[in-house]
Image (tube, rainbow, N blue to C red; front, side, top):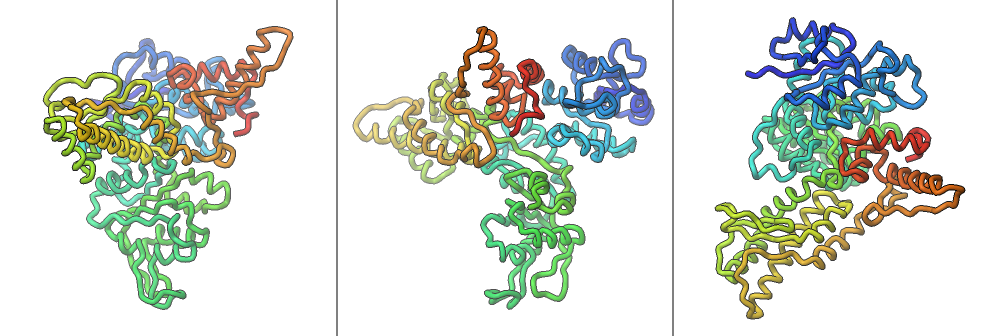
Length: 548
């Protein structure tokens, strides 16, 4: 078995010696001239990573760096030298995430330390970061194995959600680990990002549990009945309880319970839920006896639960019992547009499984005189030749039309895309059948998608876009168009700087304070976040002074 190749960023040699002496399954990548076997500071590490061409499986990163001030990355505005050294690992981690988002990192520190750093919450929530507390070698082995585990080959039928986005690949790897055992899993993400699919088709399927998959969506249950749905109730336990009913915990015994929109649980129900998770016992309402349950809980929320904790609407002890370390954040579709074609093609191919679509395909096949067993979606080019295309119906999306899809904000995320592709397939097939019935001869399996149809489908989805002020988010109208208030000044340079400052400020808010997203908008390369942040500061803008 090949050794795991580690790059250690540490200004001491303790970890290097431990790895060499106690972990023969790992190989330290030693930079030229390094006597300790590691890289001693952040700038040297970033330079090494930019120039190193061999594979690196994992970065081990220490937290405290007692090095000269000029070799320190800035931590945050106003941070003292002592604080910057103590939490230098966070500053280095920020740079690694920005420049090398595919690279897994194990941060050698504790969650208690991270809680003291303003920037830590967003960093450790990224699925590529793993935190290790102390020098426990067994724990270190588990973290390294978890971070470097290669995902199993995923059957084509189950690949529809994944794509090639780096964050989704990391989520696949992480959920492969979290699916095992009885530890709860938290899935966070906007509506339509695929949380329920992940819970059922991935976590439950890979859990190895023999029991059923049971769903409870708390947004659909009246508040006064949530306890009964969760824990069950005996006949007469409350007004309207004309018969005994099982709760979802009992129904999911030996299986998986998916609690959707868990942030909607009332505080009193949250207390009951905490006790069930701790004791693995359920007492139905009105019952005198408890019953043991063995359930893997997957809790989902369309807003970050730590924000609900801060707002006082979600109990901190329940949040900790659900385990923030298992929190997985699903990116919205607008942040993974590199997967747009992959997902669209998969949804087009799945559409043929629908009986109504299958009947339309059969009629099109008769009209063009060619058997059809598949639907493929191609963008602005002729599909390739080969046996896999011989029996396929190709929906050709012109490039200007595809740009419309890329420029859409996708407020309904993957769910919205799936419905749009389903409708696009349906209307295109119906138009083709109508053309054949009108007497026109069609002998091609390449059907061009109508631009007006796509425009109408997108127009209907715009009602899903929440108001920017109400949602607390900022959106860019049109294709990144931002209104600018032109102010006269004594020099053109001052006018240009003021215009640029206004644009950067609006874009910073629209991108939800994410410099990587700004870099993607401005430069087409999210790895150039540091350059964007530098220009941001040069314009006199300061992150901590800007309201969300």
